[in-house]
Amino acid sequence: MASLIPVSDPADPRLADYVRLRDVNLRKSLEAEHGLFVAEGEKVIRRAVGAGFPVRSLLMARRWTGPLADLLDSVDAPAYLVDDATMESITGFQVHRGALASLERLPLPSVDSVLTAARRPAIGEDTAGHAGVPVAHTRPPQRVLVLEDLVDHANVGSIYRCAAALGIDAIILSPRCADPLYRRSVKVSMGAVFAIPYARMTNWHDDLGRLRAAGFTLLALTPDQTATPIEKASMGDRVALMLGSEGDGLSSHWLDEADEPVCIPMSGDAMSAGVDSLNVTAAAAIACHTLMR
Amino acid sequence: MASLIPVSDPADPRLADYVRLRDVNLRKSLEAEHGLFVAEGEKVIRRAVGAGFPVRSLLMARRWTGPLADLLDSVDAPAYLVDDATMESITGFQVHRGALASLERLPLPSVDSVLTAARRPAIGEDTAGHAGVPVAHTRPPQRVLVLEDLVDHANVGSIYRCAAALGIDAIILSPRCADPLYRRSVKVSMGAVFAIPYARMTNWHDDLGRLRAAGFTLLALTPDQTATPIEKASMGDRVALMLGSEGDGLSSHWLDEADEPVCIPMSGDAMSAGVDSLNVTAAAAIACHTLMR
Figure (cartoon, one colour):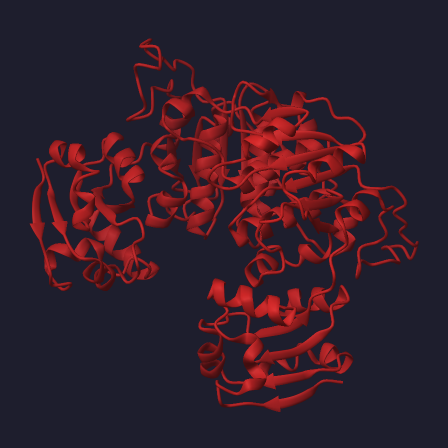
């Protein structure tokens, strides 16, 4: 059961996990050093706890102790109660959702284990199914996204949400891709970052080979309209779709490594009117939908 | 040719078009009263001017007079030069893109005229084509989006960008749908709001009838998984796809008016893991791509 501890001093060291949540550089080093991440809002906190991440602490306005009463009963961590002004002073912004949790990161699985393991129900997934029938996932992943060096946390969160909703089996991140457990990624994903298995490559140059070794066809999504339209690409049993960074798209090395470049067909009118391209989240949504058909 | 006028007082009344750009309520009434909108950043300003919107004034840091020299030569309006601190003090935020323009709104066409007119090249579209061959659009719109009561300006902008890139012919807005010419819509759309013809309904209850009278099949996009998967919907010559608001989706009245409800098939695993649905921009991207296949 959580202890409810009123705090009024924004500089109280017990609240150090929550300082300056919009300061990306500070948060990166602070979260890496302490192995933590922050979940924001009732729904996302519930999903994080349900996914098995140990709770370090909670921070909330007192009005949230009611709606979160069952969760407070079930976790063994301090819940710091603050007023809205103190909350804003600590975090550096107005926390509209009124409740935050600091949770421990768990070790990520390796790329190989994500690609080859028969998928078990994701941690926290409802193992009983809706009709009380256990849900078993006994096949290894068939449809995978590979994200190269995305920099925007909201984009990463949005892609996780979309991939999870459409049934993509797993996500593989390049070594430098933005962190799915950064607060804003978690929030935009609506907690989908807890629902979809993922791993981070350690070797940008060579690790696409691990996907090929696991039997995946590598499709590289590119705005280049001379590439194969994605809906006409040959989809074998195991397909990995590679998505590049917001500005530059996929690196030439990754494009070279792909089995086939694919594109989303664009309107000729639009291209002459200077509407350059889709943003990466729209492209990812279309690609995931096409992959799952 | 623009006159370059240095200004140092943030309260200078000549800068009134640019006050508190993030104050949505203020901006709504100010922009309606004066019939203006604001474009942000070099690329978007160029597209707005190219689309034929008369320039009321420009506001920029002096460093932008170089990159925008040709545009400043061609427009007959004052260009106010300010330093970054003054810019921030007027607008209420740090304008990373460093240049703003205030432009006059033009009267929107009626729903009927957008639906039935043979589409001419959008204002400002390159009428010479890439190979110097004039581009003629002689067919009326065949694929249309209808947006009901979206509230988020970024979502509206994102949907315009996506619709323009994929070749959707026109967009029809419900009477209360968020404004595509609001600064943030314009910015997120990358200027696509100038490239795609659109109109706003005046009668929420009856105006879907105008689409049907123009020969459109009305498809209603819904998260309801018992609806027809969108890729299996019967696509006649003229299809209008209806998208609902961020929280509640389409109203029951509009759902009732549709010829067919359609859905984007979701993963059963995701639904049991509580990943509810796609956000409206991801759904719109998938729907536009499917509509254009």
